[in-house]
Length: 335
Image 1 (tube, rainbow, N blue to C red):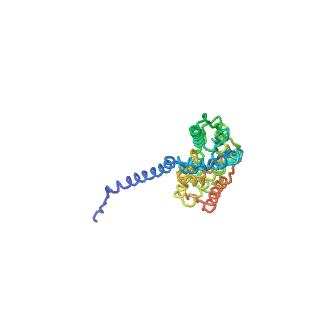
Image 2: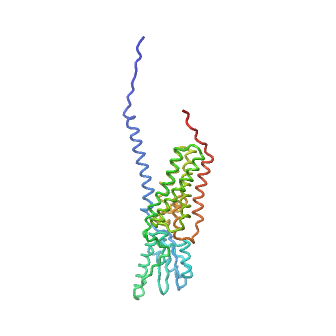
Image 3: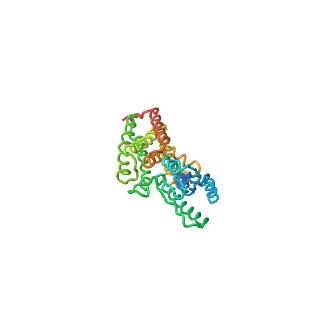
C-alpha cells in the first residue's frame, strides 16, 4: 500500500504578523482613550457659573459685580445676593455656594476649603484682586478683604491631600472584591456575603486611616464607615452581577465605567463647575463621585443635604443586588 504523505503547513507571514498588529493597535487605542478621559477634563478645566454669594449694604450690588466679572471672564461666576452675613454663611453651610463676598464697612471673603481647596484659593485670589481694583478706583487707602474659612481642613492634613489620594483605594476596594468574587465564588449567597463582609471590614480600616490617623476626614466616624461600606459593596455587587449575567465582557464594562470613567470625573480635586459641560455632573452619579461628595459633606458641611448622594449609592447597591438575584448560579465543574 502506498505510504500516506503527511503535509506540514507552515504559517505564512500574514498569520505571523496579524496577532502582533492586533495587540499593538488594541493597546494604542485603549491607552489613548484612557489618557483622554483622565487628562482632557483637567487640561481643559475652565470655570463656568461657579456659584458665589455676595452680601452688601448697597442694594442690588450683585448685578454690578456680576457685570464687572463678566467683562473679564464671561460666564465664569454666578453671583447670588443674600440679605445679610448670616444668610450668606448659611448658604455656604448648605453647599449652595463655594464662598461669599461681604462688601460692608469691614470687607470679607468667606471661603470653605473643605468643599474644594482649589476653589478656596481661587476665591482668595479674587478678593485680593478686587481689593486692589476698589483701592485704585476710589483712590482710598488700601482695602484688604479679611479671609474667613467656614469649613477649614484639619490641622493634620491642611492641604486636603489625604482624601484626594485616598479616593483611589475607595474605588479599587470595590473592584477587587467584585473581581475576586466573580472568579472564585460560585453561589449567589457567597457573593452577597463577601460584598457585605469585605466592605464592612475594609471601611472600618480605611476610615480609621483617613479620619482617626491622617485627619483627612473630620466627621462622625461610624457614619463615614457606613458611607464607605455602602460604596464598596455597591461597586462589588454590580461587578459580580454584571459578570454573572454577561461574563467577562459585562464585568470589564462595569469596571471601565466605575474606574476609567468614574475616577477622573469624580470631581475630587476640582469642583464640578470646572469640568466640560455635563461631565462633572455625570461623575457625581457614579459611585466614587457620590461617595467623595458625601464624605466631604459629613466632614465639613453637616447641615448640607445629602439625599442625592445617599440615593445614588443606594441605587447602585440595588442594581447590584438585582443583577445578582436574576443571574443563574455557576455550576461546579464536573471532574
